[in-house]
Length: 157
Image (cartoon, rainbow, N blue to C red; front, side, top):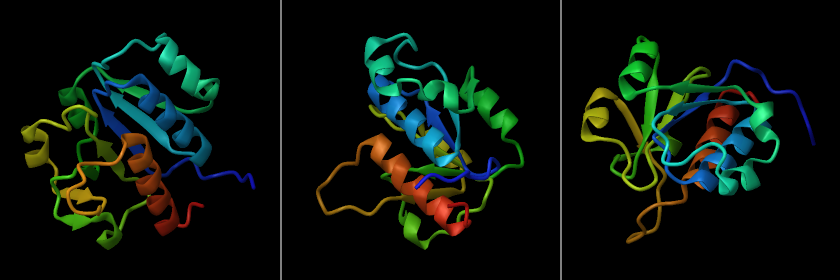
């Protein structure tokens, strides 16, 4: 079933993504669900990387993507906006959190997360509960889970 989603909804932000296939899959997810994507550079790959192109297909043209040159530029632009950090280091589950329509949901780099200074700057830090002794889900899967929950809570799907 296809439906038109509201344009002013949650934003997914990626901090210095380093795996092209994951970023491409997230672009597709955001395009299909009507979410804006924000990328904090530098990326660990080039946009013309064949692994990226293979997964992103033509979805790059179907989504609004904003690039930030640095973390400082991102935080300056987001002043007075709510940012939620998704991290395995959080103690609060996303299932216990009330998302707002215009939240920016930040995901760390696949290989290293976000720097400690980012953890200190962001009040709302959430996790996806997992079985014991598991490290983390794939970032593209995590984005899909959290984006779907945010859209559902805000009645945008």
